[in-house]
Image 1 (spheres, chains in turn blue, purple):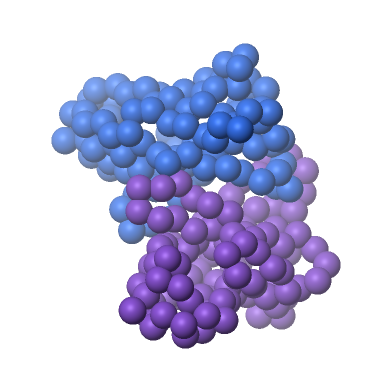
Image 2 (cartoon, rainbow over the protein chains, first blue to last red):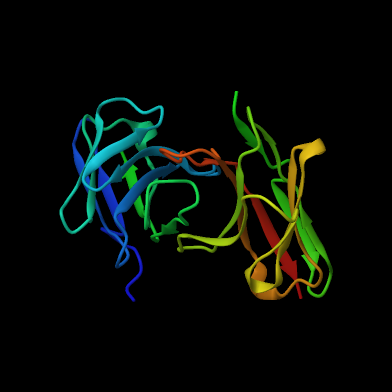
Length: 114
Length: 115
């Protein structure tokens, strides 16, 4: 069984640019959640996708957007990058979109904004 | 406001010693509770979770946690720490209702293990 994978591993961008991060969910999982983990902080919930629909959103501006594809993989897009967007971005997949469904995390994408 | 507090940013213990990591939460109702571990370069791995029932929960790698409603706490324990336990540990809560589960994580406790 393949676990959650994310690409790329590392990324460097400059302020104002746009970035797309990718996540492949674990086999049999239909839900993907995205988190931002700033240095020295715990992960913060960005949004969740359940069967290709956004199923909830944290306190992030609209320039953070996402997609989920029919194979349940997902993308996180961030427009107009700011220095504070530098962080580890984690995705997690699960069998469903409720709290009882265990989330399995990928290794993350480290984004640096210069 | 909903929050999770892990009061210890760093903890150092000797290999073989016992370990307790503290977690307190502030939430409208009793949430679901989780402990995750993050090793360098790795994603988060679930150690254990509490939904209801027995307040002492057993997890993987010899970890256990005790839910204390009166103290709004969910402390993680291990009787004998191994060098491979060195990592960062996160406590998290999620709503015990249907619909979106928006995990709220604490800021983490970094564990160092001395040989």
